[in-house]
Amino acid sequence: MTTSITDVLNAYFSGQQTHISTHPRQPVGDATLFDPPCEIPGIAENWDLDALPDDLLNLWTSTAECRLHHDNGLRRESITLLSPSASKALTARELMFWGIDDRRLAKDDIIFGTLLVEPELLVFDPTRDEYTILLASMLEERKDWPVVGRNLADFLLRYRHSSSQNPWRASVVKPNSPRIGC
Image (cartoon, rainbow, N blue to C red; front, side):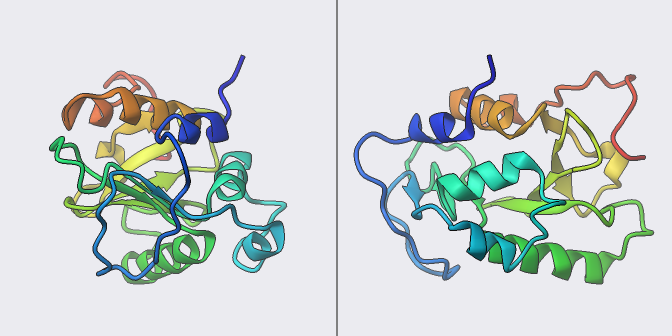
């Protein structure tokens, strides 16, 4: 039985969802904050629904944007799962800056998350059926990016249950196995 993204996100908080501002310098006092779900027309303004992976559609219909483990004092890296519009803008900006021929981003990649401290991005590779979640460092080539989740729910569970920075960052693919989009 597969775990739904909504169920995984609900496990991050108890009580109410708290609306957040998407302004990057807005101080965050709570450990985990969620925006209300995004409506399908709002997602369709930014992404082609026919080409959008189900995981991302499910994420954005669960919460438009969320911040996980921000400012909670656990010394764990904080992640922001971007809204559809922020995801589209960041993906377009990075593709324009790096291009698709420099061994980093592929034209179909979707950047859906950022880390608060590290200059790394969470990338969804829609060309694969599984092992779709990559931790991208633009300082490294794509072949060196760890695969941090079989799918989005798997990644969110691994991240939630990690007690330090390192376990969720470890690749779920063995080093000598076929790599992602190399």
